[in-house]
Length: 456
Image (cartoon, rainbow, N blue to C red; front, side):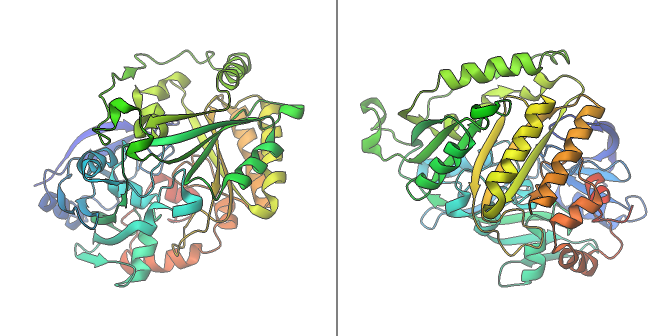
């Protein structure tokens, strides 16, 4: 019989507002089914993977949080077609290790590989190639779900498509993802040709992204959120394409899929709260911009996609009070004005960190909670300094609503239900599917109640 094995303080990766939660660790799929069947003992349930969503989407103080990351078997891998079927607890790192030696890589990936497959589906993660290849959900071929009534259900874009697309980006609220079949994309090496391009302000950044859109599969920019005047929005673009074996240095050509093991660093303690301030972040931003001149390099997939994965517990640099991540998306028509307003607000408050990223986005998918559309996203970390952080967040939300933008649920910590409803016009479509498979709202989260997807 499964049992709640511990009470634990949980938060998202940002460490903002941790709360006590009852945590269950099922040893098998049978234990997982028993947890769902025991409605009297566990009226509200939430699946949690590795806890890398930034806010409270994997936190549930009013129910039982089920850790699923150890249910991590790879069921099958078709090396010819590149189709892999795994349990939801398998990580993106696991998939890379299995698939890459055979010439397959993730179709798209967020900025960390320490994410479970189930979490990637639930958040419909996206990456540097969204403008070309879309988000993660577009590459899922089928899902196996455990529903609130204890039954298992297979769904896909062809079979029960309403449930399938509500689960893609549904933040775990439709049911527990047990398995997923993922279509990988072919690659000819574990390396990428990356062009660094400095842009002196926001206008130059957007122009450069537009000019290079069709030439690079991957595009991302580090952006200085504290720049002002003519330096507002200055950035360093990192534009990438797959590297062929002949593009590699001679010593790597004989083993194009081999990446030497790197020694990972660790942040051993929480930084003091005053360590990140306008002066220290401004100094870092000036340094970072200076030491990245225009150039082209060949780097391995870890260096390009997952630079922060080489530093364990990097979130500790924000101190014990933590931080929130704010990922704004603006449509093409209002992107430059909206981004400028956000950057001016952030610079005025002086709360942005050195981790700020701008990307081009493409069309969304059929999910009613699909985050993306044609436009630009800006993601920035905001240190938790109390009321001033909340005030800035509210001002940014107002700008987003006025400019037709929206926030990403996997990064969100503060959005109100009114703001969410204004940003996600297809919310009622999602709720209709949710009511059909979970009429008693057994699958919940702190975030779901905060944004109005679950009654308070």
